[in-house]
Image 1 (cartoon, helix red, strand yellow):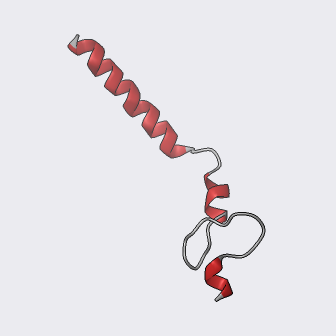
Image 2: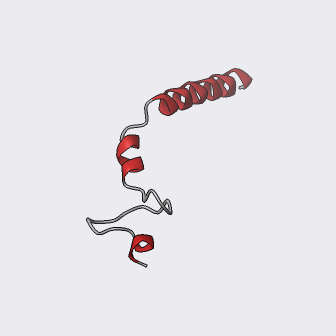
Image 3: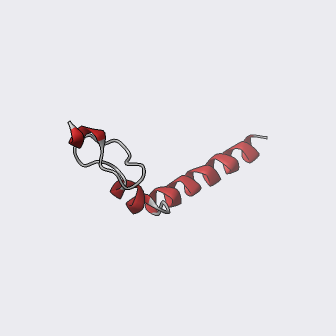
Length: 52
């Protein structure tokens, strides 16, 4: 039982390392954030912080 749990945890660690290396769409998500306030921009309009 301990062997199965340890193999499962090792497998999860390996998957986490690969996920941090190459997360699909991360550049696109960073580009969708407002540079001033950090909120996500939805649609083609500018962020609310730029309007005021």
